[in-house]
Image 1 (tube, rainbow, N blue to C red):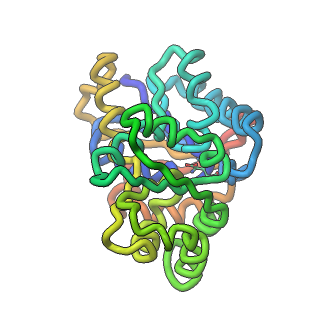
Image 2 (image 1 turned 90 degrees about the vertical axis):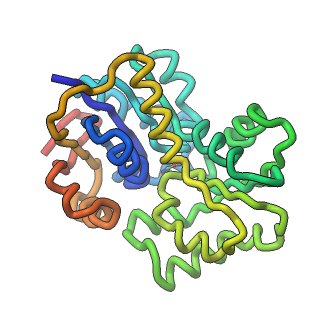
Length: 274
Ligand code: DGL
């Protein structure tokens, strides 16, 4: 049987990447793990994020995955280099793809990035962007209230609007910025509110499309693309509350996708599933 692609995030955010992987790579089986019980990762130390990320990876390695997608910017910023060095399967993060998508979009080289405290303070986006184009001007802003709000299932409405408007206030005077990177995989779930607050003249970029495209390129390069025509049965795991996870998944995936997936709770420190 063909092996699956493993996808990790601190919670439900990585499902935005899964959604795009399903669309672009419909033959691939996906095994997703969201560490909802310990979410958010954003305010945690680099060492803690690295430890939790490795625990997620170890869980997925027991499922014999053929490739790993780190669908979490915070884990990518702190752990991608080690994962690439130490794993003998291809590994991809979300920061490089997000940076590439922003470079394609910007016309005046003024790019904003919003993300968790960890991602913004790591400077990973500024590095990735200037590596591609040295005259890019990058303004970073951490938005700590977004992830806990998304994990509660608040994706739109008055509360979302108030929280997003308040957090993005420091950007309201920046009339130059033409592109805004959603540097956290939870944020695409708030995309319409973020777009509304930033205004139509700003292009809001999520890294999921570009990440799925690069996943496809890597599968091809390593000759591990699934060739079977059988419909894949995806497996989703959460370390946290199953009901809330299912509710949020329902807002992301179409009804028909639910026939293609199982959702279970997992304890990744003991590797138990129930
Ligand atoms: N979804 C994650 C990211 O892309 C992390 C959110 C969090 O746990 O703080 O950074």
